[in-house]
Picture 1 (cartoon, one colour):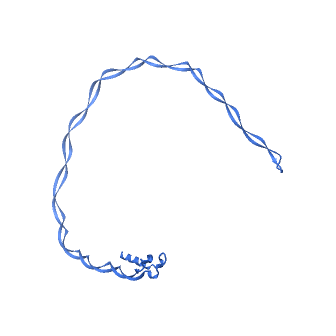
Picture 2 (picture 1 turned 30 degrees about the vertical axis):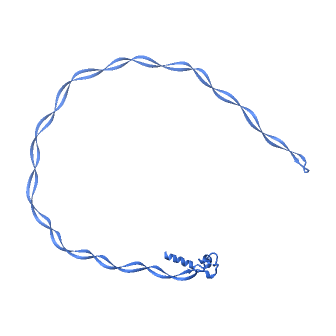
Picture 3 (picture 1 turned 180 degrees about the horizontal axis):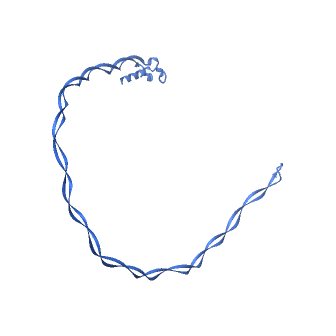
Length: 316
């Protein structure tokens, strides 16, 4: 804020007196401002770099001894009893039942139905047609004349005499010309129109009548007849029979068997391995920062004498 005010004052001091509106001050050169040099302190940003102590971490390998266990195969003989089964055939008796067909006569009463015809009376209606003359109204086409009035335009050429002007301004003769004149004349026109004219006439008409009549039809009635019938009926009876079948029995047999069995045993062995450890290492790193440094620069400041109180706007 301070630097802004000082810059505005320096700009105002650098403007000559003749650049103001109205020209130089009216009171003469002794009434104008005087300028003096004043030193102003400002600040500028200066970048600086310093070394700063810090701690970094590094991975350092080292050898470490430890004990490990290794699986080692060991083969030993192992004897065990093996039981096997052998299929031995033998005859086994059994009892079974067989269905045997047996045919015997069987008598039963059979009822049959026979169709016997007979005449049955019935009534029915028959349609009869009769033609009679009937009076009806018919229409015929009659041509009737009709007269109507019309107006027709007629064009006629009518002679018109036009005087011919001479050299002395008098008529030397007449010029005859024809002009068309349209007039209207009435005329009558006769047209013919077809009109339906009713009249009475005798027309033959067919009439339907329902006439009741009697008749017979042949119907068939079922009459039962019963008579004995003997037939052969075959049925099945169970008969007990005996037989044998071959069965196989599993007989166990035990025998010793020796095989080599491999097993794994843990063996303790010393070993070494590489272990990585994170170690803190002090070091210096560059650090850059900005510092405000003061400096001096001159500024022209106007000074107004107190005697110019009535010299216009430039003396205040």
